[in-house]
Length: 109
Image 1 (cartoon, rainbow, N blue to C red):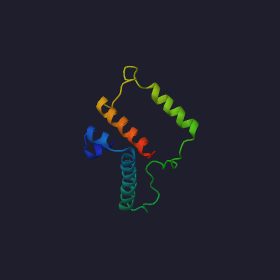
Image 2 (image 1 turned 90 degrees about the horizontal axis):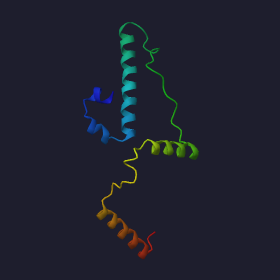
Image 3 (image 1 turned 30 degrees about the vertical axis):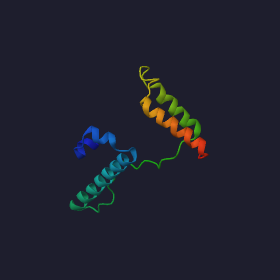
Image 4 (image 1 turned 45 degrees about the horizontal axis):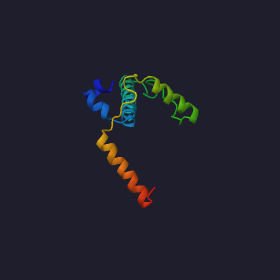
């Protein structure tokens, strides 16, 4: 829906964080309600009884067991060929190890 409404590319959309995408979808929902109310008023109605969709309940954080369950399910969806691969190149891993060792030497942990 976002791509068809905005004309953005998949690549651009993949770069958006989830919060921004959800805010945009909420804006589209409110915009549709406002348009429906305006149309109702234009036809002679009061424009207050029109509802497009229903509002979802507010997001509630997961408890620890539910979060662990979701992570376990997500891990099962990763193809076996991808497991065990590192996305950080070895020279950057060396830099990270060096930085961690320096932090320990200097007592910055």
